Image (cartoon, rainbow, N blue to C red):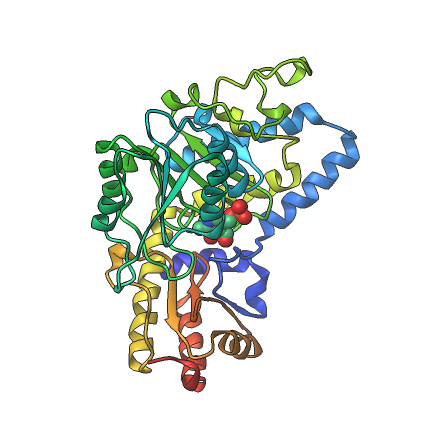
Length: 383
Ligand SMILES: Cc1ncc(COP(=O)(O)O)c(C=O)c1O
């Protein structure tokens, strides 16, 4: 295990002086760099007044950072305030013609994706769900049963926020494309934790944000749209920062930007951009592939320890089918999260499971502390 990875960076996250923080699927821990970035924002505001040229430049900088992160071109990236905003803008402009009126949604999607898809029913679209299998995967065969000549878009999450299951993005994308459908990947639980490459996946759209494994704060996300698709999508959820020329200030016209900027809306979230740039820089310097193998080794230990305690790991065991998040079945997940919090261990829960999500800064010692506490609260583990 790359013990040095955590050793080299842990001191930059003051929370570890007080707590065992193993909850990055909810929110990344605060680093000295991200804290400093907020000071920088306040300093720039104070010293310069309204430096909008500079701030817009910063927004362009984060666009380039996002592009580098997922192997896209900056012109293919919209800088948004949330995944929801990006996905809403996309679906508001996507064409559902040629008899393709259907959005296919896996049962492992985050609520926002399902809800935005169902909101399109008001415009005559149809939503088809892809059920999960008993082994906590959504097999490609299940997608194959759902995708047909009526499918316009397939929504597939990279890693499920509830149970840590990692979906087969390349295979689902290949299948969807064979059948003439487009693919949207929700990579929020993956970016920063595992390498994400839009070209390797082959997907048409991908959305994610900075709050979790990218170590930023709320209010900043992005949407990737493959270059050749941009032109054909005219979002009706829009705003002046999506316009071809932001400074034209024309209230008589809708002329969206020729790039993925057309999926943006209003004034960029400047403070979150400062934080996002700092968080992404930190993760890039540390190495996302290195982080992924560090966390996989920690999770191997965690899974072995939970087995020993007689607990049940909900997340698929195959390392290729899981990401950083490990879900553990509980008889009362809220009581378990509270009990661990009482011992200074920060976790979260969903759907009957405790969620443990290690990141670059977590150590073998953190995993041992969690296992020791779980042994104490064994009655809250479900067999
Ligand atoms: C997989 C996934 N998608 C989307 C979201 C929500 O994104 P946003 O609040 O930026 O719309 C989350 C947040 O937890 C998530 O885990």
